[in-house]
Length: 391
Image (cartoon, rainbow, N blue to C red; front, side):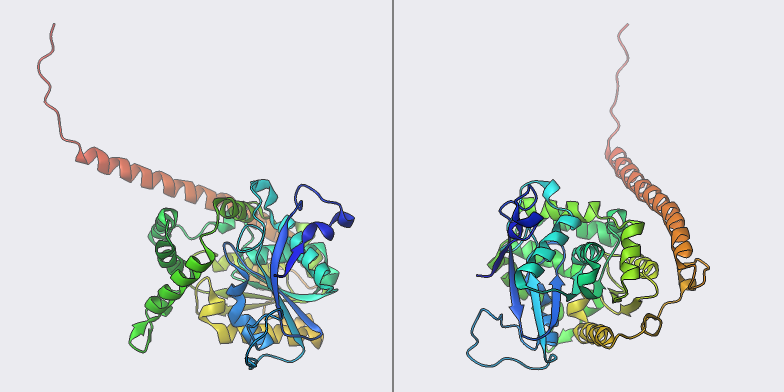
């Protein structure tokens, strides 16, 4: 089985607390000079990228397995894709300390994997938490990134908080109570897909019923993610932050970027993805699709088309101003191309105010819910008759 011992490729081969014994499980597909590294999100495994692997490499049969028949169809020639399990999930190592899970550490895992494969450069695609890791990778080794695709992304930290409404509360409660593959599959569907998509009929069955069986089978075969892995990856999301310097490093690197997002994503809010895209202007193209958090599965053809366009624009060295569909005015900051950084700095001030507002709204919502719960409890209490006091 293909594993990368990250300690062999970090700190000149010297083991550290964060990579001691860590092995990353990976798979490669197709062959060619165009390299694509795919980084999956929270609790996901490498095969979550199958629709994109098939669309780009033309096959989902790993290079280390022999296929009885040639299953290659579609895709583009000369492409090699690598998808892997992040630390804490699937067949990769599961550290027990939360401190061993940050997007910076996990980005170094991905860089070590590129070294292991002998890849000097690659198109880097990340989904959800994987997009946070991809950003850290791009800021750490921008010279090794051919292009960057961020699917259903956020800026981490408070931006990981979903829209606070009844739907979110329902999903959160069901998720916390899920102890079996069946329970986890049911809540995952509402987390990953839009309701419109789930209720569509395919023949005599809804997509929900079809996907439910697939999810139960998949979770049963791989097992539920361990508590160490889940808590660690949550910690990575919550502590993720891109500094001004890191964002400027990515923006000035010159490679093309696509931010791809589903309009009905209940996990990563669209407004945060837009804000990140604006900070990376002018190298960024914003792609909004009619889908949920797993838009790569719900709108496979459209996502694959966007990724192919990104690869081709990078290979042909399309001008960033011809690539982007954004304008600096869309960020709410007035600036010329010469004073882009001044505009971005102003956006950080606005963002700080918005951050305070969101936290206040969030905690006020919790207070209201608690108050209503206590109120209902008090109303259910029956009055107690009290006799005359003894004096």
